[in-house]
Every structure is written in structure tokens, then in C-alpha cells.
Amino acid sequence: MQTAEQLEAPEADSPRGLRKAILLIEKKSKEAVFDCRMCGQCILHSTGLTCPMRCPKNLRNGPCGGTMMNGNCEVLPDQPCVWVLAWERSRKMPVWRSHMSHINPPVDFRLKGTGSWENLITRRDKYVPPGWAAATETAAAGAKH
Image (cartoon, rainbow, N blue to C red; front, top):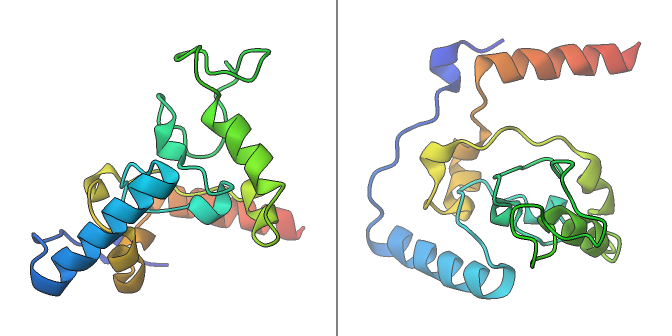
């Protein structure tokens, strides 16, 4: 088991040169296509290519329970619930359909505005708080029995 120091998310420096160009390409393309909010920990493949950070409550693992009967959001009643869209879109995907049932780690808001592509390569997006890691291990052990 890793210590808290080993799991700590590395601090980001301001991107320059090629890193900045990649970040700008990611930002412009993902905002235009997916209405991405640049959380730095992209899970679009797990949510039917719907950015879960568009949820006004920032829910990352499913709807709040306040979804209206017509499928709209209780906070923004004139807009569909992000999670209703995610479910509908995930059913149309030929791959990653089962990823809707995965529980994703909580959002590390320190990564907001950073590039998920770079964070994936550097594994900066893999940081999870010690309590989350322990709970995940306990759940996995329980599932084996």
C-alpha cells in the first residue's frame, strides 16, 4: 500500500511550448465537440462521451436523484440531466458501454484547467486520497467473496 506522500498529486507548473500547444488543442477540440469543462481527469469514454462536469452539482458517478420526470435537471429545469444524456449515449456506443457502471474516483479540483491528455501520460490523474484507496480495496475484497 502506498503512503499519502506517494499518492499525492504532483503540482503542475504553467505549461509552455509544446505542452501549451497540446493543452490548447485539447481544450478547443473537447470544448467544441463535448462541451468539456477541462477537469483534468477526463472520463468521457465512461459517460457516453458526455462531460459529467456539466452537472451543476459536479456529480461524477451518476445522477443526484433530483432528475425530473421528463429527464431534465432539477437545478436547470430547462436542460436535460447530464446523466440521462450520458446513459442514453452510452447505450449507443459500440465500445466502453459497460464503463457507465464503473465508479470513478472523486474529482481532484486541483487539476481543473489542466490537460487530461498530459495528466494521463504522466499519471498525475491517478492520485486518490488514502481514504478512497482504502474504501476501494475493501469493496474489491468484498466483491471477491
